[in-house]
Length: 432
Image 1 (cartoon, rainbow, N blue to C red):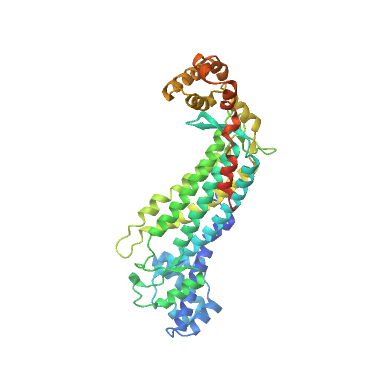
Image 2: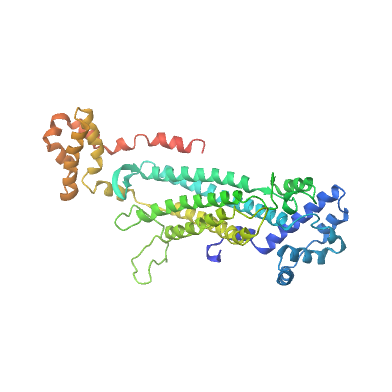
């Protein structure tokens, strides 16, 4: 991922030095386990701990010749360790190192993403409670529907990202597996106890059965989870983009002093953050199909997955990390206009209360079909000609026979639409 959309904490996980440090730790832990079992001299893990190191430029140079990154790494390490290096990687295969390393990297990335989600949830909870009772118009198909509150919009987002956190916790657990099982995964040349030792030290679970590689359905589910989180992120960003439109102006991104919106039009205040988030979500989702296609490897192993994961591992986690932090900052400073919300709600002459009038008529004895025709007839006149929906309804002869002023007051009361907001909030924020 390019530096523009990267944060140093996440990027560091995928740097070559970090990757080779993990490789060296895997080899050292394996040597410790083998030494404890009497399979290699005890001097081997001691030498790795004391002298184990590598030179990235040297690894690159060796790889250009041998065309194998793990062999190049082991050769570089051997140049630091000395004679004991002949026992390093004993009975192991490259995938033991590569797949276990990827598990470590993805779990570390998950921990950062989970922290990002915690920060976002905290902001969404605060803003939702802040605007719990700020009434606004709900929209379906982009058209005015019935009243809701802005707090409910944010509570919906909170609940969605709370589910995202649960899914990511499950995906993290699923991906956190270690395989030190040797060629084709049969443990022919490495004791299963070595795998168990390495797994425990790295905070991973033992892969129950590997075919020389850790099964890629785990990775497919992991990247699919990241994609779902990205889609939730885009859903909220899209809501902000719509609310900031000039015709709506119910909420907008914070516009800082000195900020400029357009090189040509000085008046512009564009929703650049939410638009940026929509684009980053596409990057994260783009990892899903390649991850799914990686599941179907040939027999016990091929390396068609390798090039894919070297790209999507860093790109998807770095992009999502950046996007979650940006969304948190955007929602923290989001400027909200309750007065504009109320004005928009009232701009169509009260036709948004048509559903309540329909119910009132049916409760008063009119058939639903007749009630619908009466309400729609009056509502469409207001839609086309303007004026007051209530005034038209009050003058309708069929309505006059059935509904009193008190009944109409109740039907046109915006608070009927917010009376259960507290119940919803208790459901969403229970224990939060």
